[in-house]
Image (cartoon, rainbow over all chains, first blue to last red):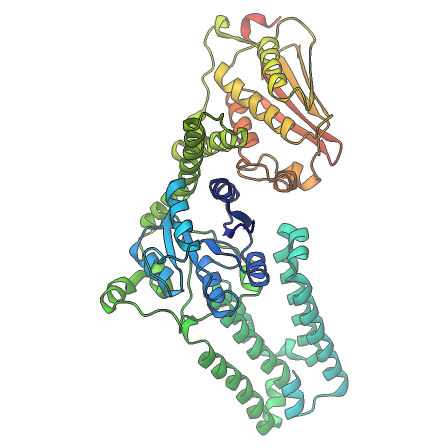
Length: 132
Length: 421
């Protein structure tokens, strides 16, 4: 059985491990990266079912990575869920501007994260922003 | 370089030298941007990158005689400016500096430029053309975008940044955009004007959100398993514990965990008993994998220290030893005293550390290659906290380690006053 692949990109290792633990039990195959450039290469070679993106990362931030994914034919339709510690409405707007599908603010609960991922993988309307 | 040579031929030797420099720069850029190379260079990557760039730039400037030209200040100023920005803005400044730098290299000295005015003007025009084309191609990357949520990396401007634009971004409700515009990260030229205390507060709050998220997720996972009547996963408990330690550290500061020193000798802690109990407890959980040996030079070694803090210190040390010791290995605990000091040595036959890892082991949040390779949880705070605690109790902690041979942590504490001979 092909399990939906989730790509988690966060430079905080504890966060990556926690998110992976929350999703692996739900039948997802989780690939995680702390380096956005490596994650980008991986996403382009094997487009995942959904990408979970931290915003503040060295080298390439989440907004930039999302914009690049949106420009590539392979990954244009892959839903992107932003995980961020920022709660400002401006960040929600930026998430939308760069082509994000949804946004979850830290601190979040495991069940909320799963619900958002499930909705995005299932192709339902992308949470707050709707389907692009 | 090629365009300049085409417009007005340079001396053949100089042109060949410049071409070699250009090829060298491209090759270095390609090699240094490989993920494997970046990983193996670690923190030395960005400075090495910069040294190579400077060396190539100076070679080119020397070849063309531009070293003597005052115009060399222009690309230098471009590079200085690039250090202040991130993302596409940095890429733009770097490109600007490179283009102007090429012009300077091609134009040579002002005297030479005056001799050949037409060629010089042509050389000025083509870099400007490149800049104009770049401006047209990058409509959305016009403003620098400093990100208050992350520390500035001085080497960042030298790494490749794919230029991205927001031209194709989804339309936004006009009202929302207007009200949000003044400080949105996309127009962050206004961000540096924000009051500093607000920046600091945002940063502190941001730092707290991540560990709090991790705590919530693990608490949920543990609660879900409990509801199904399943025992918690060790890794979840361990990661939850280290996030709580991190939160404590962030909220209270390092000195808040300062232990109390007991006032009287009766409150002294017997290290032989404490370490014996810990060894027994760890044998129950790890005994099938690793042999845990304990030896003491005398039946009691009493120290004047906070028992709770001591437990935390030695749990951290033993957790590390067990985490990095493969199955079949040995963890040895030795306790003794000489004069005014008690010694505890915890040694293991684990994966050990490299010189760099050993030097940085006590740094806050540093995680060595072993922790990363094992995908071990934790924040790299164990040894930092342990040192804080031991030093607050008047002791010291040191580390010896060799790659593939194991590690040894020595904790030295003052013996309890009544027990001092």
